[in-house]
Amino acid sequence: MSNDLAIPDWHLQKVVLGSSLPAALYAYFNNAPLIYPSHSVCDPFPFKFFPSSTSMGRTFILEEINQLVHPTGIDEVGNQKEEVYKRLCFVMSLAGLIPYSNRGVSVRRTEDNAIKVVCEKHTESTIFADEFAVFNDDGILGLEMDPMPQAEYEVADWFNVKFDGKHSYKLLKSSEEFISEFYFYTASRGKRRGVASSLLTHEELNEEGFSDHYSKLKIENMMKTIGMKSNAGNKIGTTIIQLHYPVVEHTLRETRKKQMRTGKEDNFVFYTMTSEEVLARYKDEPLETSASILAQELLSGN
Image (cartoon, rainbow, N blue to C red):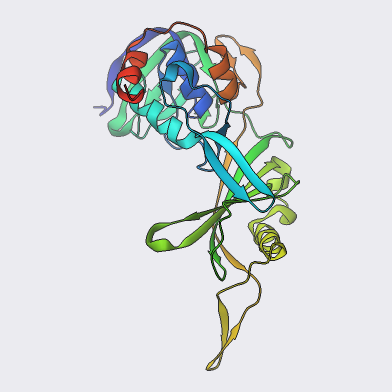
């Protein structure tokens, strides 16, 4: 006897596939369920911000201005994308628009152009829709494609940072796609941390010149250029030799594949809209859905 538990099929007008912020925003504005494989999460990196001019519109999230100090000035930016994503998903979960959140979900496309969702404890359901709006196809069996050589990935390299003294910088910048920005932050117990942002192709991800080792060397050089020195030392016997250059220690590399697939396959439509584009598209449209009502009550601060 099978242990699988079948849930009645769903027949919906629109379903959004993907776990990115654009996918969540699009699902919110269309009052559509948001579905994604649990092992394929594309939530925003914490160093991603909206432009300062961005209106949060009918999300009812209060608009913020943040300042990022760097050696040549101050950048003013808007809301932190990670925080917007968390608040939006909270509201959508309460409204029942993220039906499989954190439940060990696998998703596959079926031969009759539906999707089959299997959760932990082998519960499964089949979902039919007039349109599946695809923002991320990663991990969706029968839908995802092998990476193209020029497919682009947002890359975050995380570091422990050691240097002397204090500074007010939150950001270092370069003109290259590899380590275009490096963000400083303070973790628990006052430990200094940093994260580097890059935009790399699939080919570059597998090249030595773009590895975490070279990201470490580049960041140390960027810090050295603005006069930072290390508070670390090398111990030789009983003698500690002070290092006169900043030291960073790589701890983790994370990647997010950018959606570059466009067009339509039967009822699967592929979208490449950014978060800013989704917000602009629905900026002036009236919105009276269960999620928007909850957002207005919980997030607007009124």
